[in-house]
Structures are given as C-alpha cells and as structure tokens.
Image (cartoon, rainbow, N blue to C red):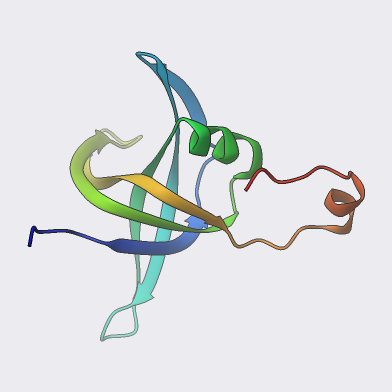
Length: 119
C-alpha cells in the first residue's frame, strides 16, 4: 500500500480566478480563506492558493467569483512564499484541485438565463 494525502478545504474566495496558459494546459488560480477561532477566541485566517487545471479551470473561470463559498479537494500541497503590499514576506500553501464544489446558491436571475452548468 502506498502513501497518500486527501485534503478537503471549505472557504471563501478572496480573488477572482486568474487564468493562464502553462505549456498546453490552462490553469485558473484563486485564493481561498479558511477561518477559525483559536483557544483564546481570536480569529485566525489561513490563505490557500487553489490551482484548477484544464476543464476544471474553465469551470472556475466561469463560475468562481470573489466572495464565493467553495469546497476544494486535493491530493497534494506545496509550500510557497510571496511578498505582501508592505514588502513583508508571507508564507502560503498551494494546492492543485482535483474537485471543486460551488456552494453558493444560484440567484433567480441565474436560473432564468437557461444556462447549464457543465458538471
């Protein structure tokens, strides 16, 4: 038996997806915030960078928006680093989604458009 990681993250999207082409593949990337209260009752936020590839990138680009509630499943995490607006280095986790669930309710205007969601 091999080793594996299975992680499920539910959180709010912090930025609209950015779509890029990497080689012959498309990737849609966006941030997700996961919140909790620590033992002292103080709110803590963990930001994750979600990467959706190929057909999942198409779905993310079309339906995921800043403020959306999503659930992402992955089998791998990568540490990464970035620099915030004040110039301070920050740590982050990147994950490649193999499943994306949109948890927002459709508005009545969305239902009237007659558009089918491709999943």
